[in-house]
Length: 466
Ligand code: FAD
Ligand code: NAD
Image (cartoon, protein in one colour):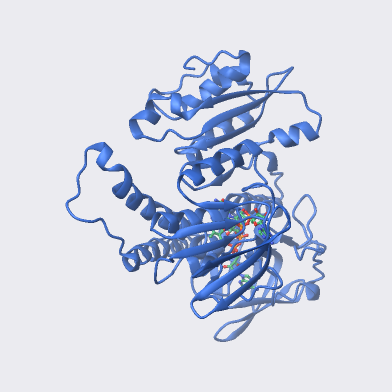
């Protein structure tokens, strides 16, 4: 039987990064994955394929809507070849997952294909084409998550679908009904809207992206409405029924009246649930909590002291970069180091266009905590760079402590916000004040000038260009 210092179950961004860091630290490492390709949800059916389709559909939208204004004329109609678009997405996925195979080999990590099942706290049975058993001093559970569902919905994976199927449709829907106005619903909703579908979003709460700052929800709502995505907040879905190629969704609206929506596809995007099926966690003494997450302490250690858990299967944001940080954290903890993660500084991004990005506290959180804060906001449309690229929507908002001027949160909607948020993370990691950022030189013309201007506005209401 092969013996390891560390075995990792699950090869998503949490698991494969943990494996690399363990190997770097000199541990004999095994990685167990039940699917034939490595990379987990993120690389196979999550972050990477969704961004590939967002990029492709954005190019199409530009060609149809914006090229003319830029003085570019295309003879004849611009057409979508969905099959080719999906094939390009798959090529990006294959290249990316292949890259993980390379990294595993480079770091001498033994990869096992099969379902990892605990026999006890130090033995794992791997059920693949053959059944293998390995011994591990330490184990990291990184088994991730699966799409959640509502109890009355039968996801048939043809017309009533999750994000996984939405990434490989064979036709452009005529009318896609999206249940859930969160990240997946809005990103994939926007993909199909750009390609020509009618898109109707039904959100249970009173605003889309409800966990983010309310100002971002409002701005994104406004922009998506302009893009003709129909957004219905405060709608409680009651039933989803398929009749041939038609899907009928019934919901109660704000007034409690029953309303009906008819489409040809229904995307169910109401969150994700932790995944521990087949793991046999109890055999290892690993406890789950009421939400089905693996219960962990501040060191990400489970109720079995030699077993850790990271990523979507534990509490916290379900984000690839959060899983990665936790993978490194646990590897270094096992090696006897004292690593640190500041969960407040994990950025959150929605890759619609304009993009939405945030880090730190929202206004709602600061109010609830009774923290005295000041706000500086700057509209993207006031930037020269925005006018040059015709990306006028959005703003940057800086929240700073009223007394100390320390930045407590940065929230933005706008072109390239996903990349710009890194500046806010760096500033907050070094506990910068709004004035610190306002006095840094920002290249002109760039979208990042909006961060400087918002910081100026927060410092002393002295933005320069508005
Ligand atoms: P996962 O990536 O889910 O990986 C878990 C792996 O464990 C899987 O490969 C699974 O097969 C394997 N596994 C499970 N049980 C066993 C077992 N018993 N034995 C062997 N293997 C097992 N996050 C972002 O930060 N940015 C984004 O842009 C983004 N976009 C997304 C888009 C979509 C459509 C979706 C669905 C998700 C997106 N996410 C995004 C979320 C991101 O994918 C997850 O947060 C991330 O993948 C979590 O990583 P993980 O390592 O915890 O688990
Ligand atoms: P989400 O939590 O972002 O959004 C789910 C939405 O569905 C929420 O707004 C919620 O209020 C709503 N909802 C819940 N029950 C409902 C009901 N009965 N009727 C109508 N609406 C209902 O979840 P998601 O969009 O499914 O994404 C899952 C996870 O994947 C998220 O936690 C996210 O972190 C991650 N993800 C991240 C990215 C990114 O980082 N860009 C992209 C995609 C997914």
